[in-house]
Amino acid sequence: MKEIISQFDIKNEINTVSPLKIGHINDSFILKSSTPGAASYFLQKINHHIFKNVSGLQKNISIVTDHLRKKIIETGVSDVERRVLQLIPTKAGELFYKTTDGEYWRMYVNIENTHSYDAISSELAYKAGEAFGNFQCMLSDIPHNDLVETIPDFHNMEFRLKQFREAVENNAAGRLAANQTLVDEIEKRAWEMCAPERLFREGKLLKRINHCDTKVNNMLFDENDEPICIVDLDTVMPGFVLSDFGDFMRTAANTGAEDDVDLDNVGVNLEIFEAYTKGYLKYATFLSDIELDYLAFGAKLFSYMQTVRFFTDYLNGDTYYKIQHPEHNLQRTLAQFALLKSQEANFDKMKEIVYQAQYKNSKITVE
Ligand code: GN1
Ligand code: MG
Image 1 (tube, rainbow, N blue to C red):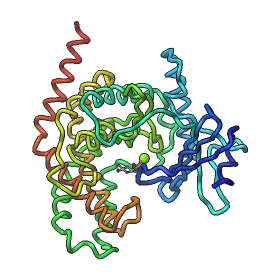
Image 2 (cartoon, rainbow, N blue to C red):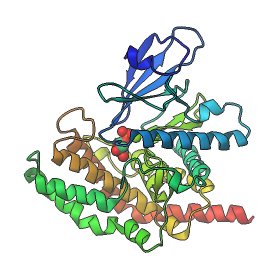
Image 3 (cartoon, protein in one colour):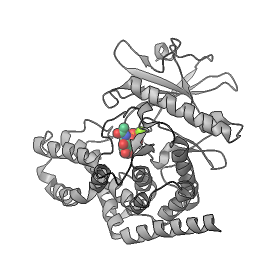
């Protein structure tokens, strides 16, 4: 670890290295110095089996953070360094360090005195909606061609179903027989869930720059519980806006946890759904009618997509997501599927909430 840290262009001596248990993909550490007032750092080992083009990935992050920094400075804030991630280059001037064993590492300045949530109140959901709406606005003028797709077809439901069908076909871990009902449930909804891909091909739905991992815990809040910075920029790329809306709802507007063992805990939280929608639509004023129309669908889609992705990984023998126990991916699958069923039962209410929020916003603009 010392040898890795020494590659990065930092002045302070690092005295403590603490692993952080966040995310299912990369390994993260906080580095601290014992010198009072000295900056701390956030070091990550990038999972290059998943992010195969690390150089493209780091370039994306650098473009996105530079762009955000410029926009944030224009608003006149005094603490831009707390509002956008800051990559630390290596002493050789690279955006990442590759070890002789072929591991890839990157470093950011750690944004101190912040916290994140796995579950939030309506009040915070409203603020989070404003923050993600504003984030999409700020990124809307990055030319699409400047960014690579860090994971090709990442949120393409047709592609995820193809991977799923291959996993069913191969049955690599021998886990299929016990879970056939779930396969049928997924197939039953497959056509409906691929609607955005069809609309895209028909030229009716467009792609915008999205975060593509808007889990509630990817937002940092400051000491006053104000959203201060959006993190985990690995997947910022062109996608449907309903993805970012849907993934937030999947994680925040759920009365249970992503991997809840007790399925009775799981269900859509309409209060959070409403609060986030209102905050989001206040800023996301650029949406077309069809995008607005599909926002509530986005919430269902993301619970479905995550059901499919966790289940695919379970059938493949847990090769993608980090797991805490052998049945973890199945547990996650069942919890996400339970959320989907609750969203289906509440779909009309969700659509009405989006409609009302949009109506109120347009009234505010007119007055
Ligand atoms: C992964 O590890 P994390 O929390 O950043 C995954 C997301 C999933 C999420 C499910 C690159 O995100 O797409 O929605 O797990 N990231 C990647 O919790 O696959
Ligand atoms: Mg991520």
